[in-house]
Image 1 (cartoon, rainbow, N blue to C red):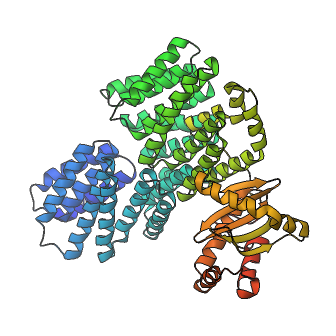
Image 2 (image 1 turned 135 degrees about the vertical axis):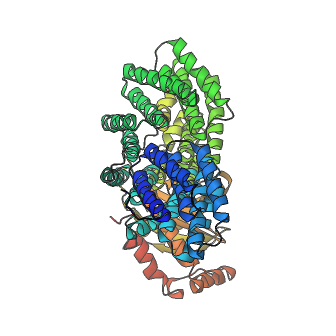
Image 3 (image 1 turned 90 degrees about the horizontal axis):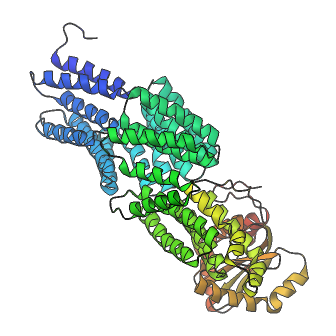
Length: 623
């Protein structure tokens, strides 16, 4: 409400506050209507920093309405206007410079220029730090987290940025950005496979947006909650959330917002087997795409093919295959669509192989997987990359190439661990352990006349492709501590440098030194030629890690994942203790074996890690 006696600057400032509230509430059209009028009126008086702010708040609203070109034009306009206002106070001027840098970062992000986006967010933070503008810093930190997490796959680093931004948002009572940060944090956790935790955080975000009465953001968060439930396999709850999201989206009337919701709804209904409703939503998506002048034609075609793929009629399935191939030939197709088209085509071809037994189909799937890995790497889709290594493992087992299968499992686990996908790493490690238990069975299959179809049952190849196509995150069983048996360190030539037994049974130690080192040396050669990290000897598993010029070897009973984390922790400790490392190097040069008395700190360290298990390993709780 305008007050009598206010000057032009004060009136514009009051309007700006009203527009900020409209933005927090998601009332983008209303904001733009009034902000345009204020900007028009400002032509009658001298331009100032509030005029710049007015342009920038309109930019925010235009992005929310998917009018990206207009938003970009307004940023340029604001930047040019700011250059003419050099008489303003340095702190106020720098604050607007920081805001414009952040807005330019948003535009670069929308144009998929992610390095430039991060560069501008960081520039905004640097300017803001000079003047203590913590609100501006909070916004940029959260956006950096979004970009490097979603588009670069750096999930742990992204979460750190978002958390830092949210601390500042909370300190400044920034409810909108607190909710926005929670939504991003939950999205990153969902990618990591932590769906239960992500749903709880999505719910917190939803509560704040409800308080702000922001239906646009409420619809977006509900969409994300639905997707998280779908990954868990709770399709009824997912459908409920997405239908709520669609209803809210229809209320606010932003057509583009509805496209993604229809896409998710069609996927869920196909999974549920409710093809009539899936077909109806596909029809609704077609109409919406027509209203938007074919802007989302590729998404419509992808969903059409997914629906056709479920048909029992050969003609429909053939048409689905044609569409998938057509999409894969499109050079402008988004990475996300490429990955989905590839996975769905793999699933369709695998179904064809199950019916025909045609080996050419397997060769075609092989070529698609090569492309899948390439696209996953280029798009930083590390979850897909890790799962694809697991998929390749199944195909290697199908052709009875056991060493290749084990090498692929090692590579897949390395990718998952490198990019913070702990649950995926555990899943792959467990698969590797299971394969080691089944090696005799697979060796026997080599000697038998088993068919590809028979071997396919053992590989669970169909299950793996289905889980990837539906982006289903499988719950991994709880981790159990292993039983330590023996820890030893050998030189790269296989000469013992240090050893310690955790077994009281002397017979095992006699067995170990009575020819077992021959097997160890053989495994060393195999590891580096085949890229393996573990081998089984009866009920025992041996893990080997390279720490040049040594190999750290750990024999145990039980699961490998926690055992591997334990060995890595031990390596980190001895490598970064200068005195301990010098002793290891010195004894190695002298061809002497180290005893516990030579390094007094070694025995308590080993007991803490391997026996007492009192240290926390990579965020894992001790059992």
